Image 1: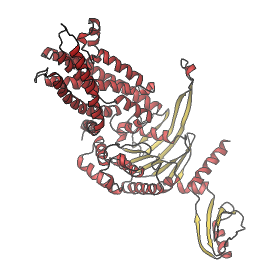
Image 2: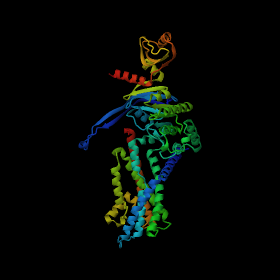
Image 3: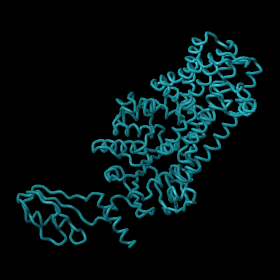
Image 4: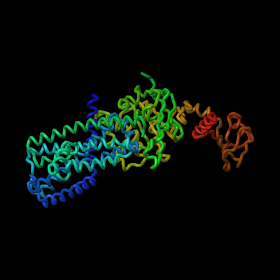
Length: 264
Length: 328
């Protein structure tokens, strides 16, 4: 067996492990679905009560928008805190003695879990939104693009969490960074309100950030799923995905180097 | 390439410790103190040897072990483990060594043991059939066949540690590094784990380097000891030589018709006394043990007798005491 196929086999094994762990955590999954329902129902009601005038949006599509962003934000686990725990407890030492990098193994495991949760949240959210609005705002041909964009958004969020987790090596605890990141993503990512409803200057800034690539861009496909819009969304996402992958590799390498130099 | 399983030359590791200054000093630069954990140790271990790495807390045992696994870079010195420089080729080395940290688990808490072991087999790139054969063999040798389908979370500590050893050995590493493998186990679980380790080592010729505070682990499993204190290697000897050199007394226990026999010989003192059973500590520098026994047989109606080596704890204590005396 070649080194490359061994590595891919190990990555696949970790992804499958993450999928199984997420599936066996039924209480956590049920809790997520319950928590996910609340903002969807509340914002659905708010949008119906909001005079949208000539904004170009309607309450039904905006409800679907919130379902999409919420599904993406709820899908990744708390990987930053798991990495923090591994580093602080020294559990990372055992992981570092394996023939697969700790970062790669951790990301693969979290991808498995994220994909399972995103699938559940996507299906549940779709049913919820359809029951609440009575419409499906996206054609069946554009549906795979929406699924792909949602997946890329969730994985992008996951990669940034991995970076935050590795900051433990320098900061001791990365929680404050995570809180800031979370608040910024709520605002600049357009968690509840599409960026197109923001003031123009804020919209211009927000749209070019990685936060929009995580939430706004994929969710905007329920507002506009023409081929040009799909191409633009995937373009932004792939751009930020490449950037995030580069940052993850750089930070994980630096953190591991520091860890093996200075110990737990 | 070295023919030694483990070769260590002048290995040293220092850590930078920053002093806490409290709230008032949060904007001040914290003074850095360099702490030497390991100070230039050298040793070599041949393939198949079982070696104990002994030392008190903070002696540098775990730091050395971490350097040998590649998860810690030394400040200076050189080491090769299975032909690899650990901190430069950690992932390649990982395929050649098995590691058991007694206080840390390599298994997945919620998964059945067999799933964890199969996952480890995939991480190490084992083909399905050889992995299943290996799993079955380890399960039999370590007596974990009945535990394979149970989640790790439902195992007792002793059961878990047997499964941890299976995890460390799934990829059949020629070198096994054990850090406190029996910590927290009861007497019978310790004995069982030690027996399994010896059996596996004998069958597969595995080199074992073991750190432990439990002298029972060392006596039962190892044939040679490296004694480390304050980052320095104090001794590197076979266990038998260690005893002979550092423990110049034996314990002779007599079961006699007489209720409390007395031996007024030079270098012989009563260690413990019960009715019809007396233990004497014999100073070998002053009197040979044979003369003590001959005298006892002459004077008393001896029903049974035993000559024991004192516990290894005493040996280690004697080594530290002599090292401290030399330093003073």
